[in-house]
Structure formats: C-alpha cells, structure tokens
Length: 246
Image 1 (cartoon, rainbow, N blue to C red):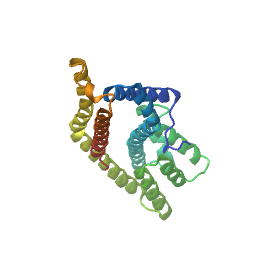
Image 2 (tube, rainbow, N blue to C red):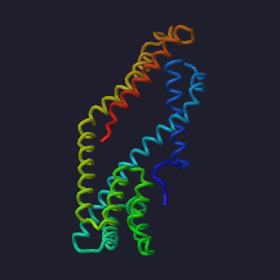
Image 3 (tube, one colour):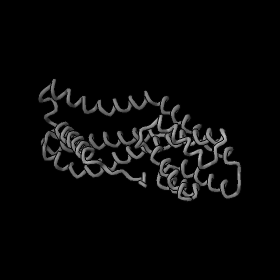
Image 4 (cartoon, helix red, strand yellow):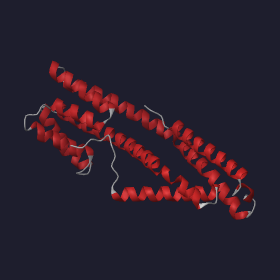
C-alpha cells in the first residue's frame, strides 16, 4: 500500500509546473532586469519551486485524508451502534463510502484493503497502525494508537471511536472556521503579491523610458535586486502568516 508522505509528480504535472516556473522566471527577469541572462541565472531555482509545490500538494492531501478518514470512522461507529461486529462494521461502512467517494479514493482503497486483510486473520489494530504510519497524519496515527490500546485492554470501542472521531471532527470544524475567516485576507495577500509586478509592468507600458535608469547599469541592477529580494521575502512572510496550524 502507498506511503502518503511523499509526492511524485506525473509527467503532466511535472511539465505543467516547469512551464509555470519558466513563465514566472521570464516575467521577473524582464520586469526587474530586462535581460534573458537574468532568466537563465534564476533557472536553478526550479528544484526549490518544485519542492514548494510538493509541500503544498502534500498539505492538501493530508487535509483530504483526514476528512475522508473522519467520514469513514463515523460510518464505522454508526455500524457498531447498529449491532455489527467490529470487522463487519468496516464492510458496512465501505458500502456507504462507495456511495460518497470514487472507487480509487483514499478511504475506499484503504477500507477495501483492511477488509481483505482481516479476512486473512490480520489484526485490525495492526492495519490501522500501518495506515496511521503511511498517512503521515497525526490524528489518524493517534486514533490508531488509541484503538490498539482499547482493543488489547477490552475497552469500550464504540465509546472510544465516537469520542475520538468527535475530537477530530471538532478540529476539522475549527480549521474550516479559521479558513473561512481568513479567506478574504488570503485573497488580499495574493493580490498584494501581484501588485508590485503589475505596477512595474504598467509603468513600462504606459511610460516608456521612465524606468530605463534602473536597467543595464550597476546602480540600477543593485536597486532592482534589492527590490526583488524585499518582494520575495515579503511574499514568503505573508504566506507563512496565512498558514495556521490547528
């Protein structure tokens, strides 16, 4: 089963992200330096850009894994309350999950694997621990550890699953509320990130020659380099401020 802690670009994703970086590279080089040589000098930044994209995509995947896992465990808990045995509860939950998610979705794939392994007498707590490890999501890993402890000590599984799922769901709701409250700020941050580039482009188009002293001379190159450095630092600070852990 896959490890969800790494991201491997498909050929299409890799080409698309390389094209995006090439476009940004060329845009910045022309706006700040009016030089194709600058674009060439910035080209080694591609691996860093791809690394950042992978980090963003992994974060999106982790959030989706947590949402799907929470839904799955809510259905398992409902099946347990309906009187199903612990192993059969997963089968019943899978039937409902297939109505909600695509056949190749994370939760359908993992529940199908759990059901297959339990039919081969593999302990379900071990399978959940393995899922928690591969998911790289703390809440899933914590749930698996609590479930294992309860299973071995004969605890009230229904109560433990219900309480744990409620705690995860509460965190999800808190995260969604925070995201809703800062959506406007995120949009403002993105707009402000574009404004400096748009301003330089606007002046270049509407007032030809106005920025000529800033190009192709040591003083101008220094000023534009400092400006670009400040711009990049401000962009990353703004992005970091908008990222809130729950």
